[in-house]
Image (cartoon, rainbow, N blue to C red; front, side):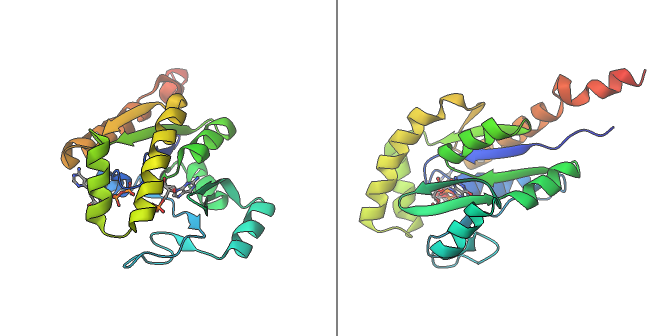
Length: 199
Ligand code: ADP
Ligand code: 5GP
């Protein structure tokens, strides 16, 4: 028997720092890998296809949905986003953990469909700080910032089924909190029960 992998779903408003915290928390680890999502959104400057996202057109995205290639999918501010199923299932079956940045609609679908998911919600200390981060990232128009802040309020309300909340105020502290979750989940009784059976 081996300890099983988990699918860590990381949600929270756009600009809250999900990818920044994930990168810091998994740096140098070989037991957790990042799942790259598919999106119909246009790449932002500096984003790399296959690394930040698999950027696809609407037709391709809809076909992936129809063919059952996505573990979950959702529309976020008029674009489609989804998690490729084959990658996640292969890694989990190998005992690896997978982490992905997924919105709350997708997180809830994953929780209902799998018994290996852990849902983490990230917040900023205040909404004002969230606006500042979106502005500082410099990748969104004023209109897009407004829609993302509106969406953030709805996401807070929808995060009720989540397992953990990380406050991303100081980045190092937030990454430490995420690592603590990895450790706690690894030590869960259910995950290590097989040690008792070998006695
Ligand atoms: P998300 O993946 O949630 O959309 P990003 O990881 O792209 O967010 O972060 C949004 C912006 O906020 C980036 O410019 C990032 O450098 C900045 N950021 C992330 N975490 C912090 C933090 N703890 N303090 C200040 N700025 C941060
Ligand atoms: P962004 O456009 O800022 O990269 O992401 C917008 C939103 O889409 C974020 O809330 C992010 O969590 C979400 N997202 C990214 N990838 C996926 C995915 O594969 N599935 C779902 N449901 N949401 C995703």
